[in-house]
Length: 456
Ligand SMILES: Nc1nc2c(ncn2[C@@H]2O[C@H](COP(=O)(O)OP(=O)(O)OP(=O)(O)O)[C@@H](O)[C@H]2O)c(=O)[nH]1
Ligand SMILES: [Mg+2]
Image 1 (cartoon, protein in one colour):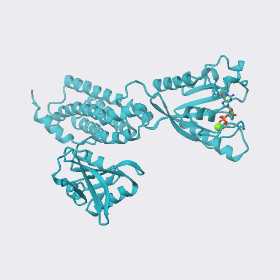
Image 2 (cartoon, rainbow, N blue to C red):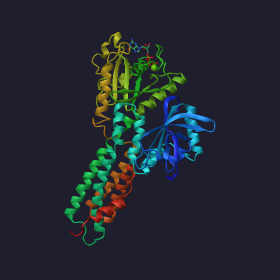
Image 3 (cartoon, helix red, strand yellow):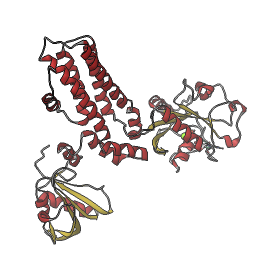
Image 4 (tube, rainbow, N blue to C red):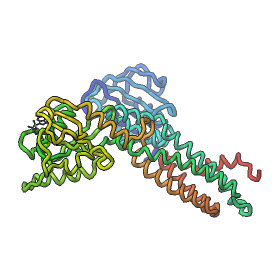
């Protein structure tokens, strides 16, 4: 996409609201807005970052009263001249102003293009640009905190630090390419290997936050599972706080999977209510049960519900869950919920470690939240540090970085030619560069070499 034209878009959500904002960015931003604006000052003459009142007209007359704010590049979101028009939040008003801007010469911005320009103008690295979307999509406080940390450049800085360390090591190794007679001495080799070891450790720590990132961005996939009529849909409704799913005393009520997100102490939890599992001749129910199995296979966590007022019979799914093993290593992604305890708990369940629960009286709600939290803390989110939570894209790049780094380490340990080790290390640097969107290995190496005193 070209950077030398001027783009415009309605930045606020579609629909009615008190106020809406349109943004115009590019070299012609001010002069272009000047063509449609009437106010005390001409946009080109406005002081940056101050709001000016005025009106916007088209050929038929007044469209709206607006506030105009000018930002001059590079001190703007996009790094170029940017104008924000705050108008009334009507669908027609905003559309009319946008079409006036387009007629005046602006190009309609592509999705994300303002942030893309911010990245291309070096206002932010790629991880920060991605964090803008994470911030907008955040559904819980923890997700928001993680997005804000990334937006503040925390991940980018960590990676830049690793990149710098690797570059210094690479410079060292490449210096030997020019002096083939010297070879890497055993002491130097050991020192370089230690450094690579350290960088590898830092990369591995970042990769370990991938699960955390996935859960904060997309929620913990939590499947509510059990026999028909045990109260799965009742549990979904209770946790959601409203009657989302149909509840009835007829077994086999839920056919399709129903998915909603709740917030458990800051963790987004994607609850998936499923069709009760049993053998059925009804083809629709069979399809429902097939979907249940599919969901089960992809679950991070399974909330296995049983009717604890009834005896534990042969066919009961809890047998499959091995009641005593729920919560242990064997069934570590299951929480057993002993539902309907308001009807009394059957002796068969008395020694079970499951959470005593009642959708009727809400007994056990806090214990369930605690069990979900404990599960997340011991598996998905291994620490309480949410400052770094990498995405799937980052994970793929960093894994490639680690693979190449391992090859470089092996090369160094086996006394391979510096040329070969250098290729692997450059692979690592490129993969890290992919995460932050910077591939300036040559520039940075040049800078390091200029300070390098070889032969000393
Ligand atoms: N007494 C009592 N009844 C409950 C409780 N939870 C659910 N029920 C009742 O149990 C029946 C079945 O509840 P559902 O939530 O529809 O059960 P389900 O597991 O979703 O059933 P299917 O969709 O058929 O698989 C309804 O009549 C609920 O009112 C509870 O904690 N106590
Ligand atoms: Mg149901």
